[in-house]
Image (tube, rainbow, N blue to C red; front, side, top):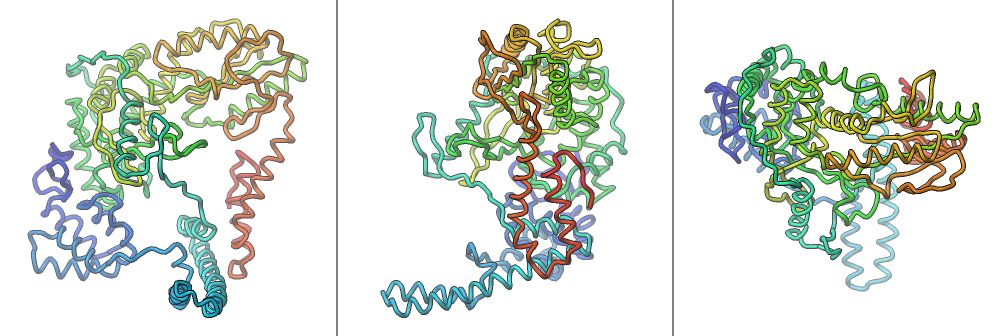
Length: 602
């Protein structure tokens, strides 16, 4: 069944069959078409565009929709009022022919492109003298075009800054200076052989991702009951808050519906989504479309041919985010009192800067009082992907989460499906049996509860090992899955690490020995701990050194700031950009890099 089967007849979000995305025609006439004919902004065209076509298939043509949509809609409606949406979109496609993309076409004039064609022809004819003459002429015109292009770009940057269009300003800066985007080419199979065919690459991605999220133990969740002791009903104001808090300009999930559509409809969308969310709240049953996600592989450091060197970021339906945000807010009142102050991950008012400052302060005080200190920076292997669902529900119960909220989460994760979107197309749907995916709204909160259970079972709070600060024993600092253990001796650190390691394995998490680092300010005598010993470590974007010396960290950030300045060189040297704009760009793009953690306002 479709996502919006619960909606009333005639609504814009009326029921549609699986794999088919058009919305109800009567709702379209009443709620969208009138608004489009009146305003016709670009994002509305994109919103309607995505409803009947697969995501990203035709977005390259949206630049010229604004001047065509209104007259075309009027014309097509008069021809066939019963098939409005499909005909309008088809008409748009016919009037927006695809053009062959050229790497430098946007900065070269038509004259330069014609010369390039002639030059290629002369080269094939082996006319060296003619080719040399055309090449000199082409290079001259190309330099002229490049200079004119940069001048126009800088003028647009200046205009965007003057008009206060921040998003367009930074987008234009990225277009001007160029941004590296890693492309997925060939990858390796499980035996290390290179794969180049599109079908083989898709099969490999499906094989890898399916194995990554496959349930380790065949222990089915037999909970099919419905909780009758419900939490308070969802209010319309909660739905409105959740809808307004969803970040715009984000990629859509499998349904292809952008969040702009809901924000255009305003009160109508709030009423529709409130009806759906309230039904889910009472029945604890989720629409299957809201259980589906699209994985986007994002490359990490390392060999780009290895699937394991990619983050699998999940894209989910924007409509489902409304319900997830409400559920997150209801959970928050219970989890805030569960987390200790050593956990700073994904908590309001806390961040990596707090943990960086804590570690630096501890190292500084250890030197002041001439004490040795030993750190272990723990890294888990695929932490979010290894969360066992059945163990998670038991942990939620032990942590005092109401049964109603646990049942909602249990049914959300039961029967989840996903596909992987690659540069060669999408894979087939497969089941997700474990893990909390990156990109899910609830994943940080759920994993924090999972990690807190490990630390409680390991008995870190009751352990005598650690550092004594104002009468309190501190032996760990955490930011989500990044855990830092600390002690005043090798033996104490080893005992802490073994406790965490054993209890992590019990719930399915394994330490990544290659990325687990040991840092010590004192002498090492009988070191028997798994992990590489280092003299410095980059924690949360800042380099921590064993001797507490900050000079290397300062030099590092100065070099990073210089790199940013070099990338913006063409913009800063342009005479088309005023000095105040250049100062604003330095404050917004260079200062945050050089002075890490300091918020600099324009």
